[in-house]
Length: 174
Image 1 (spheres, rainbow, N blue to C red):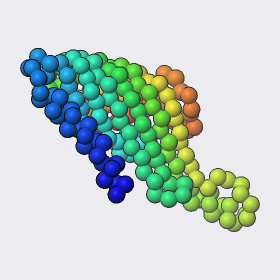
Image 2 (cartoon, one colour):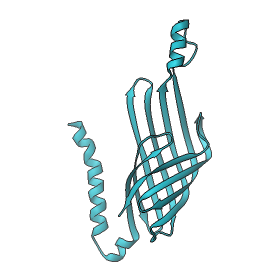
Image 3 (cartoon, helix red, strand yellow):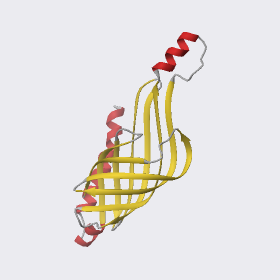
Image 4 (cartoon, rainbow, N blue to C red):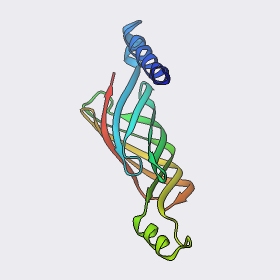
């Protein structure tokens, strides 16, 4: 029963967005826009994306997580405030700022074997990457397909983070 309640909120948000987008006068419909999509990122393998915009300014949120077992999980959430250039063309791009938190942890079989052979715990038996940052972002779009590049301007947490964050996927705008 818990799963039914979990899926009610996204369905209600989606229905509200569709009704709001198609109701009212034509002028208001041209100003508001909504995004839904899926993609991949270099630290968060799969993300769901949602966005709401007015004219050329858009706020996007993306994130997801997965837990497979002890020391084997990843999660991430990221938000972006962007300005869209060439909005009415099939090719456009967004520039702005974003921020987020990403964490990934995986078992390290070699470290685990070393610890078992020597009995005491010498090495951490898993690898992890963690990052919390504020970034400058650039998104490019072509017929729904997008790429995203984020350059961290300030990092709150950095444990083995990449210097350049990227993402790619497909997003529908309505």
